[in-house]
Amino acid sequence: MTRLLRHLPLILGAMLMLFPLWWMMVVSLETEQRAGMAMVAGDVLNVWPEDPQWQNYTDAMREVGSTPWISFLDALANSIVVTVSVIVGTVLSCSLVGFAFARIRFRGRGGMFLLMLATMMLPAQVTMIPLFLLFRSMGWVDTLFPLIVPAFLGSAFNIFLYRQFIAGIPEALLEAGRMDGLGWLGLWWRIVLPLCRPVTAIVAVFSFIFTWNDFMSPLIYLHSESNYTLAIALNSFRSQFAGLEDVHLLMALSVVTMIPCILLFLAAQKQFIEGIGSGAVKG
Picture (tube, rainbow, N blue to C red):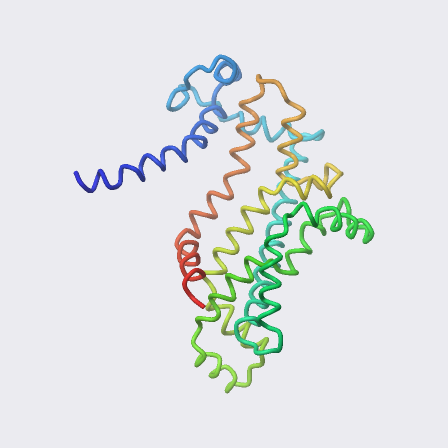
């Protein structure tokens, strides 16, 4: 009984956090009339629909954009390309810079590290216009490059995580690598990066969730429907079908967009939690 009481707040908190997901699932499987009545009249929904309308998902994906199915598949492909590229670029650049700050002794290292951390205090809105002007001058507007290339230049928070973890790696391992003839890049690629698996997992999960759900950057840089990501396609669907009679389709498309984030977190949950603890206490 005491154990149940201890876990009761966690159970209630989990139910509270899962309620929006349950509500989206139920509405996405309801009929058009039931979903509309739930939104307008506030009708209480069943725990699970009596007659689940699974075709709502195919109908919603078919209605995205001006060309049936093609627009959804294009948006899905664009989101996958951008997200995978951002994850690869973030892991490579941030781990390399974090390794340099943690292990390479050079003049001004401490000051440069503090300056890098200070950039975390700059709101994204401050750099939004200068970045847009830069990418426009390079002819990258309405392409995926503005969404991908910045990831290969590193980010302060992820560099900090890698630096804290790499600082806790035993020096004996690096000395053994040097005795085998490895240079700095060899040490980073063959010794340090494989040992950074927990931090890499947390950086990959954070990068995936942020990039997959990012709406502002694609809205600024992407103008052609063929270049839309899922976030922009979802907003386009919401603008095109603004009536409450289409809310079941909107919820179905929202659930489809959320599924990859949920699956990734469940698959990397152990490394995710371990990476948070390692980055917080080492260094």
